[in-house]
Length: 125
Image (cartoon, rainbow, N blue to C red; front, side, top):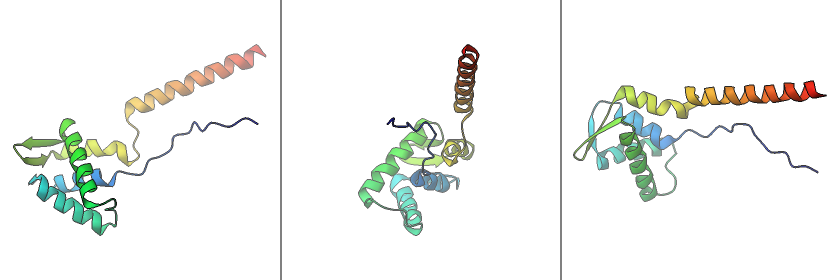
């Protein structure tokens, strides 16, 4: 008996740490990491989403923050971080179920190629 391979897109759970970082940094205030993490940690605890221990959460939050800095959504000046609201909105959009234009175009091209191959196979019969 053949095993069926699942080719469907499985939706990921939204990244709560990044969402909280974006929410806090969208306030147009500058934060040092310790202050920023304290606010994010309290928000996650209020949402009952702070699992895995505080130190692990601190590491994850720092990594997510550095990714936002690398993408240009957060400006780092010395030890202070300040969010750029327009860029933060774009940074979080793909995680909330929106499909980026490049991914949508690739999916459409894949679907068209499959349809052409099916049409050729049907014409050959």
